Image (tube, rainbow, N blue to C red; front, top):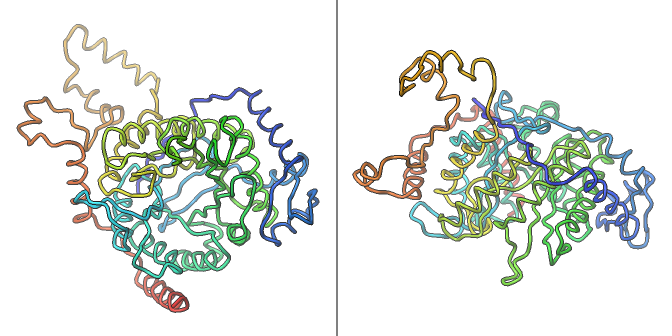
Length: 482
C-alpha cells in the first residue's frame, strides 16, 4: 500500500527564549497550583515516584527534576501500523500525517442534507478513507446514533477495521473500553505480543482544562501504556473561558496539562509511546462557541509543534476544522489555512484534516473528498523545491535555447508528474470548456467522486478466520451491554 508521507517543520514562530519562558512559567504553575488527579491509582503513581503531592486534595506538584527524569523515558518517535503491518506511519521527526475528522454526531449526506450519523456512515466513511491517497489515518468520523451507546466504541472500531486497511483510532476512556478495543486489535494483529510490537490504534486523552486529569481517561491511559499502545495527550483549552485569553498563557496551561498526562504514561510504563498534542482554540466571545476554524488554531499548532520538539516528543495538532455549516468558501479558507499551518509547523499527526463541518459537529462526505485534495496540495508544498544537478536542468535549458516550448520533451515527460500537483477536483479548464461540460462547482464534483468511490472502491477484506473471530468477540461483548 503506497504511502505519501510529507515532511514539515519549516515554520517556527517562537524564539528559543520564548520556549524557555513558557517552560519556566509551566514550572511555576506546577509549584503554585499543580494538577488535580481524579484517579487514586494515578495519584499514587506520582506520589510513589517521589513527586511532591497534596494528599488531601489529590493534587500533584511535579518539580523540574521530576519532570526531566520522567520525560527522559518517553520515545521521541515510534511507528503506528495498519491492518497490514507493511503500512506504517512514522510518528516523529519532521514526518507529517493527515487524519479524517472525528467524531461528529451528525452527517452531511451526499444529497446535502444533515442528519444524525449511523453505523452505515461509519462504514462508508472508512471506505472513503481507505481510498483517499493523502489521508493516512482512519478516524472515527461520526457517531452511530442507532446502536447501543454503551457499546458504540466497539461498533466504531470494528467498522473501521473491516472497511479500511489504514491505522485507526481507539478508545482510552475507562479501563473496560480500553480493554475491549485493545482485545479487538489483538485479534487483527494475531495476539498480544504482536500488537505490543506493532500498535494498530491511537488512543486519545484530553486533559480537563484547567489543570485536571479525569478518572476515566487516566484509567485508560494507564492500561494503554502498560500494553505499549500509543496515546496522544491533547487538551481542548479554550482561550478566554477554560484558559487565559492570551495565547501565551494558553500555551503555559496547555503545557502543564499535556506534560502531566505524558508523565502519567511514563510512570505506568517507562517508554510507552505518546504524542504531545493540542485541540485548543479561542472562544468566540459573541457566540460562546469555540472558533475551531479561527486563525488562533494555526498559531497554537505552530507553537505546540515547537514545544513538543523542545521536549523531544512527537506532536499532534488539528487542521481542517471549519465553523461553516456548508462546504463553501468559508469552509475552504478555514480548512486549507489550518491544514497548511499544521503542516508547516511539522505536526506529526494532524487530526480533523478531512470532512469537518460546523466545528466537527458534522462530517461531510463531499468534504472528505475535497479535503483529501487540499491535503495533497499541502503535501506538495511541504515537499518544497529539490535542487540537484538534475533538477537545475541546465542541459535542458541549453538544448531548448530560444525554443518557445519545453512541451513534449523527454525531460518534461519524465519530470512533470514528480514536480507538479495534478488535481482530481480543482478545475483548471478554460471557461468555455467548463461551461460546455456543465459548469459544475467543486462541491458537485466532490459529491460525484464520493459516490463513485463508494460504488467502485474495493477494500482488501479481512482474512476469514480474523473476521470470524472478530465477529464472535463483538457478539459476546455487545451482549454484555444489553
